[in-house]
Image 1 (cartoon, helix red, strand yellow):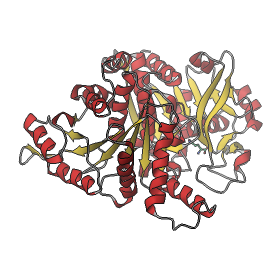
Image 2: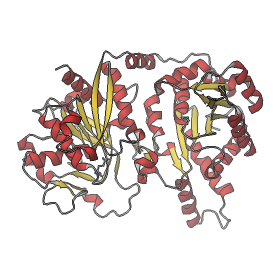
Image 3: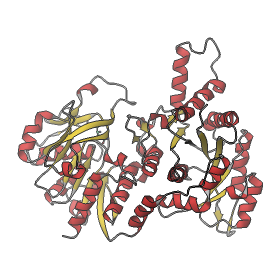
Image 4: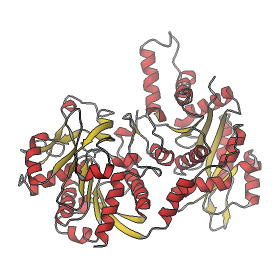
Length: 537
Ligand code: GLN
């Protein structure tokens, strides 16, 4: 029998309390004590994965090495733990039902009526235990999306109840994350919403073992005692999670509150070795004590919602700390950029990042931003669509191909400098059909990127359908936009740079997905360094 221990994280009272950060912080502490930990997210929506969701709906879609399009919380897990996740780490209701229905069609249920209990719940339990049964982990933390009491989370809650019963109290525990609101008129923190959400959990047969309470004010001892008594948890299992100035403070805050100690005690695991957070705290120290500031313009079209570019913003935090500078990211809506306003908007920046994206809206502004960076010798970093915009800009303004475009934006352009990949031409389904996940890339000797990576063969994660059109490579290279990263198997161009420019790099892949606290991404580190050098000129 597997000896893996399971921790379930549920949420009550409100969404957006930061279950993902609490799960990642606890995992960090356990990892720092020598345990092998992974985190999984179960999402109660019907989409098979978040790949088809608009960023305004769901924030960024995070991509793993194995090409899974997943919830952005997996990004936090990787950034905190520095261990890659996979498709198994994110499961949605859509995926569960899809799998059960496929089994039904194959006749696997032998004539039985297929029902939520036991068929859907069995499938959920299997998905939770796949990670534990792999033998790779001592502890699996499973975060249940949504809020307790939601109709759509019921099968998950029932699965947790069953698993907890099957595995026993030493092997499974439930952490309930809740909100303790402050009523300013009364000048008081209120425990009633928490009592109610714990009660809702109890109605489904689950007793919370640990309460993590999100709060804007310190919880007094009296209040903790009251919560413990009314919510049926031990006093030491009432954990305060007060608002933090950075998510990277949360592991230390959870350590101070004893979340890892009480977890280990309840799971009957040794807590004799203290967590080793040396590297983490060195990062935090650099992050909080910058010696200078650089300002980067993030040119995108989903800028109203910070979560849309989550991994890029976090990668800047890692790269800033590495350079001992603070990175002030200014969001610029590409739809609002035109030749007239551009100088005013971009001239105070030290670097320009043109963001990934889909569709026509806002692309002319992105092309103008590339032009501005190129002509003004400002460090430029283009990611995915941003790289494609750099190719279009160069074709239009340097090669003189005035109508150059991507066939994503203009199907009839005479100069398809960015075109649909061959294997995409027959694909009609939208879900899970892009070029996804990790692909190899060979770097050209003597290029900016070869120096940045200090390697000639790299692997990075992709998510796109369109590509650089090699029919134009001779002309573009001769004019100064050089392809410096090529997929060794397919010949696809993955990186372009301008050797004559102080720092101009466009990448077809998404480096932001691989930046972690322990391993800041070298391209972000080099771009921030170039921006710093620009700032002191
Ligand atoms: N829309 C572009 C493509 O599909 C770029 C995608 C992206 O930026 N992730 O190729």
